[in-house]
Length: 278
Ligand SMILES: NC(=O)c1ccc[n+]([C@@H]2O[C@H](COP(=O)([O-])OP(=O)(O)OC[C@H]3O[C@@H](n4cnc5c(N)ncnc54)[C@H](OP(=O)(O)O)[C@@H]3O)[C@@H](O)[C@H]2O)c1
Image (tube, rainbow, N blue to C red; front, side, top):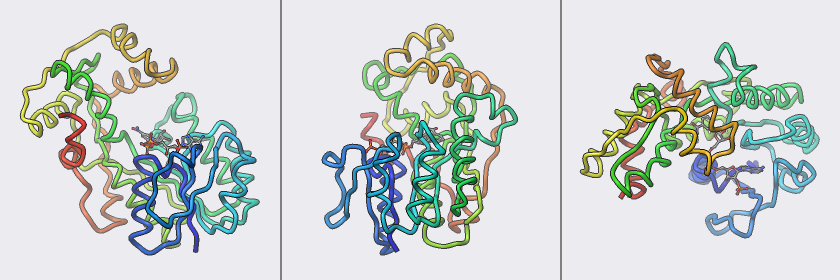
């Protein structure tokens, strides 16, 4: 059985590739820039761009399952190519945002809904892995931490349940190596609720520095994000923070149900990535 891994250079895709290899599964890694992709010796690499559906045929040829990112402009075209290739099971990195009541009118959630719908309607077996906010979003704070030991937010008391990308990958690997999760859409979260302020405190404790959380206005946050993040995402990030103040995000037990292990904590993510903040 060959499993094709899209996003093999990514945090989740890279961990999926490693997890499949640990289980002895034949893998094929894809990238839009295959020459720049670093994979273990012996792993075949194919060029593929999800936004150029004609590029997918060679990457998918002869494969049985595929791990797919949802960063797709034309979901129907991608789903058609996947179905035509003979792949029988797609594991999609989706998002828990699709479960919110206003998902269809939300910029971010509606993208994932569109990809899920296209895959469902293609007739190929699927598993939609639906994580909430990644712990790795905290990596964006490293410049402020490195320069002046400070991180600025408009809503530092926004509450999240950040998930370690290794947990997402573990669930994807479980889905890609059995039929047990076919038709499933596990919603995943980290094991605990933490405000942004508390996440900064965990990072501070791990690197042995007192970090400062600075409150800023939405306008100041937008000005800070805009040089690095496209406009719709600036609005999305600020909206998500605003709505997370006073929220009580669900803590999912799906990771433990599927893998038999406890979910990794935010502190574990910081320890695994501590060099980012030093
Ligand atoms: N951050 C969150 O809180 C959160 C929550 C829920 C869901 N998500 C979703 O999770 C994904 C990010 O996961 P990550 O952290 O593992 O990402 P990452 O480390 O930033 O890597 C992104 C990967 O996606 C691949 N990719 C991007 N566009 C592609 C395209 N057009 N065709 C083929 N491959 C493409 C890239 O591959 P190449 O550059 O090598 O081609 C890269 O390996 C996004 O889809 C995001 O919407 C994120």
